[in-house]
Length: 193
Image 1: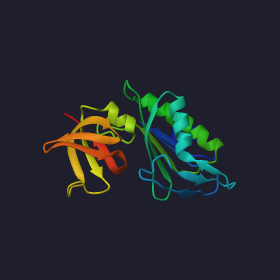
Image 2: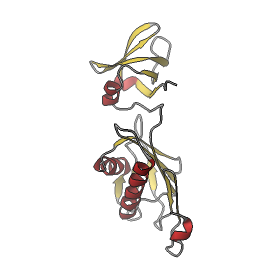
Image 3: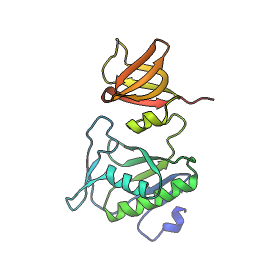
Image 4: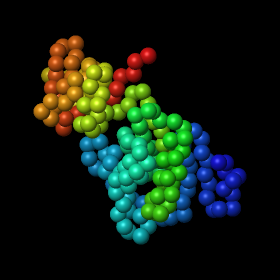
């Protein structure tokens, strides 16, 4: 879809790969972010003063289409919205377009104001955020950062062994570590080439 196809509608839209750009004629929103990962906790106040839990809204749409919501990123001014999706078979450009089109429609109905929406796969260095992810990717190498130092160290690289008693089990060159799930600030898969 090109901008020329949308002329005369009062909106501009360009789809390139898995990204969509759309400007909506609604009043500005107030965005509050809170929480450790802040990826499912965006709260938007629309032009009518109603609160919309953006993370839950996106998760409901993505899950309804049969995909897994991996992460949501919101730019500091709330104008760029990035949505990362996954599915067992892998993500295609058509999958991204499907999710982008559906989210665009839902955001219009819910009066969510944004400038640009980007939908993509999480990539080879996929973030690991949920406890279920730590189980799912057991046996793979990850990079992990803790919120508090563990033995004077916050950054670790090792083979993920899964979860045990609410802790992430990681085998490093120094041996096995058990890091409480609540102390994990960030974790990503290490891609193998």
